[in-house]
Image (cartoon, rainbow, N blue to C red; front, side):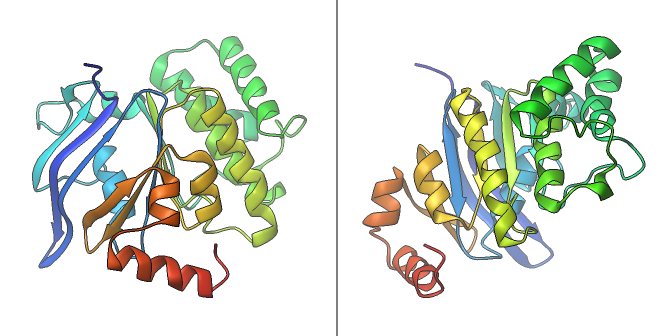
Amino acid sequence: MTVPVLELKGVTKSFGERLVLDGIDLSVDEHEAVALIGASGSGKSTLLRCVDLLVEIDDGDVFLDGEVITDPSVDEVDVRRRLGFVFQAFNLFPHMSVIDNVTLGIVRGQGVGSTEAVDRGRALLEKCGLEGREKDRPDELSGGQQQRVALARAFAAEPRAMLLDEVTSALDPELVGDVLEAVRELKLEGMTLIFATHEMSFAREVADKVAFLHSGRIIEAGKPEEVLDDPKEPETQKFLRRLLAGGRI
């Protein structure tokens, strides 16, 4: 059997008395894209942060290529070098140029030579539609362009998988399409992805599997056409009806 790139088994997390993740089981295979959907507060962002070891889990295990990465003895920095994380906020360094934002991590964290790093960064920026903007500062870019820089930065490290946390939520509607196109390119290149999204049309197009979270549990998962077009669980049906009524589907 093929070992999943990422796997969660019984992952539980509470903040105080609030149970946020309640025994999450999820596997993500090589080159697979998994979309996490659900209402705000359903646990999507916390799940991603647990995978990246930004949040310590209370119970269960997270595996990367079959290795338990939630064991206290594991080097968290090493794990994060193997995973790319793109946040809702762009988290770019405002005083640095675009190309320096993209290359800083691989130069300092992976020891990549500066020439190779710049070549890699330029190629990724071109793929993200940002050719010629290498010397700009983040505040000279639109929100959508800044988010594409963040995607290029994460991909520059050649991660084993990428985690995307509502990467379009902070953008004006007219900027969303360019960022989603950059994610489509990652998928076409075979990157393993877990992404939280409220863009159902995007989940339908890009995801191999959709997982619906409700009250910290995955209560329905399957192919996009199964979950989005013919949901079995009442809570999934209710969630999708609300999105439909709001024009989000």
